[in-house]
Length: 303
Image 1 (cartoon, rainbow, N blue to C red):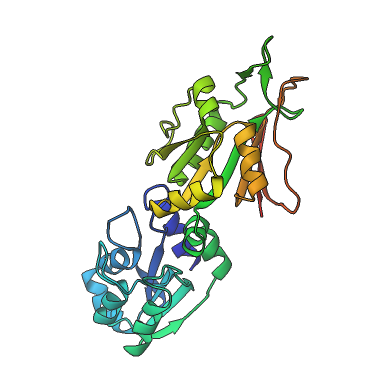
Image 2 (cartoon, helix red, strand yellow; image 1 turned 180 degrees about the horizontal axis):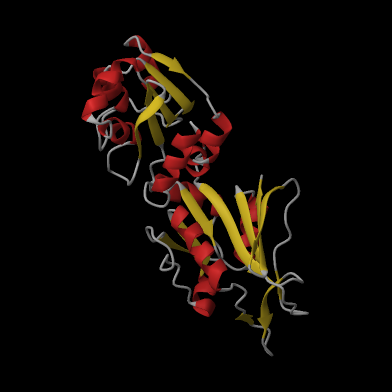
């Protein structure tokens, strides 16, 4: 299952709104096939793993076990049901990492397998298999997408300086490497949001030019938007995840409404002394990672 999780990461930034999934076929004490969901609309992980089995090993499938990070699908979508393929292939045992909360699956895949006489073992490395698809899982279980709040700040907690008239002037905190890391984060999200003021002042490109992947959908938020309703609208449009990369006003509004799952802060080793203060972190957050990116520190918090 750990190998399947490694494989699943290969689809990062390319499978949304579908989840990342990896699969490994084991027989005769060795891996005879493996695969992952490479891109949205393409074959699922189980299909690629079974197809990768060499002709000389095909006879082993009748005694094989397939490890899959997410419950095999049971419905016809852009591809046929993976549960049906496993049954037709004759694989007698399936090990599943996490259940699929998608209402079109939600236990039906496992039920289909068991009714066909396939042995199913569930919840192997459950936490890891849920974590890798936190964006997908959150969107399936809530009326809103998974939300990441992101900002960069000085060591003394300011996001920008102010000119003589009190208007914010952007400051570049990122270095060459942390900019690449940031673009990777953008590629992980289906959409990216800024406030109308940030768009006018910073004119951000909001793309992933420094990383391979799909450019996120750009969403501009007006100052008087009803954020809960806006997030529900975004979810109905099929968007599972969104990064909020706005100024402190927009970020504070999301925090006030409790609309966040993760907060990512990049802190540069410079002091401004005064300026536009960064948001204050809400109580109850858990620090899940702290990484040095050259001289900058990137800290990630989750609820």
